[in-house]
Image 1 (spheres, one colour):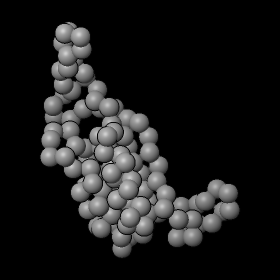
Image 2 (tube, helix red, strand yellow):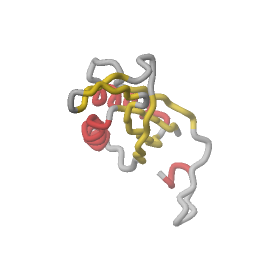
Image 3 (cartoon, helix red, strand yellow):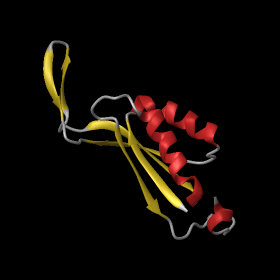
Length: 112
């Protein structure tokens, strides 16, 4: 099993979620996040005053899937989240050793 973690722009969340549902992903966890990459934040203007945004708002999406689907799900997430502009985010894949569904005690593939 693999854990796919994506940090993307908040306005792309619905696109990514819809793409994952179309692929057949049935569960995901989404959390609000903030951070910066190479651009180290950016400058915005509000009511004529310029100010620095040090930590850019993002969302973090996590999905656990079977090993065989990892490459395809990774491509689905990247395609749906991509705008072609700086700050689109990152996606990474991590191996998962064990999963336990708390309610039933099911493990690994049965817990998905």
